Length: 417
Image (cartoon, rainbow, N blue to C red; front, side, top):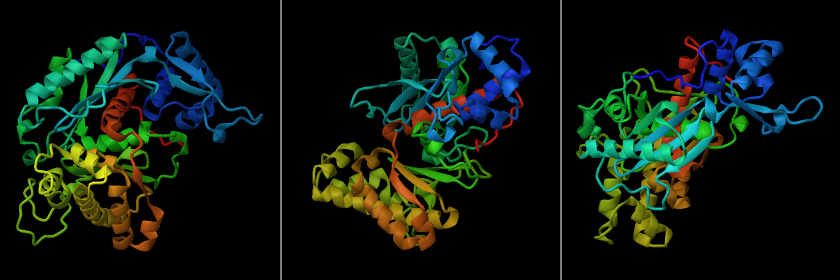
């Protein structure tokens, strides 16, 4: 695969300049004071490094920082970010029934998304049964998105991809039974071959949903800086998964597959076997296939979960009941998680989250009833701000953070304080 450094980066940048640039990549835009805290460099050294980056057109400055970063004179401090000329990243979300792509620059600014239409979330072939078709579609969307924004593939430093299956640290599907059609495919290599040898990173869709919300979902300066801060993103779609951000980083666990909420056992005596090979899993009670089977008693021609949600929002009692039941079971599983890890925030995403309070209400009620009071009272549960774009945005963020090591090998990530 080709290097993740775009042509616009000169090879003779000073060592301290590369160090500063890598922090802007891994941590995102910051004020000069914040960059000093993150790098440990003196104000004068940072000024010299910024001047070198500015001379090459690799940074831009805007008055956008929060009130917490105001100068002693009361002026809002300037926020420094890498420019579009510095390079681009792409995020790809491959779901069982959709493909979506996000284009962003290295300054943490989303440039464009595709497909953009209201019905774009639906993708006719199943990702599980037609992997080659889906990879062809993903590559086509990436190329078209770049072309429509006057960008070239050579400007892209990395491409992140999210898929609905647990991934090991080695980038392999950890449980072939959950996405059997992809078990023999080296997804990174297969997509790289379609995109001119581009550097590809692959992770679980819920993990990337969490990373997307943490990186692009709101005011990053407003997030608590304490090392114990924890955010959980739950994707409720065909399957159910959770991504965990702990102290600003994805928590993957020893095996790399932490967050498989859909396979938490709710009833070990249930004789029905889950597709993971276990029994009594949450997905057997709240997965899309189960919900559609229940809803089709009243609506035999119901096509998918998006239609289920539409009917529930329109007031259909049968569909409302099905979604509320799913919320009850998800809330019980999340009550276990809340007791174990005590997160600050839980964000609900995925197709079913479009039902809003129909789903959120039962989730909150069951977390309140099943988790210990102190833990339940400390967590905020709401819809994910990025909605259906959480995973694609997180895939772009994954490529962003990985490119920091390419700009400055050996960089060690430090937390913003």
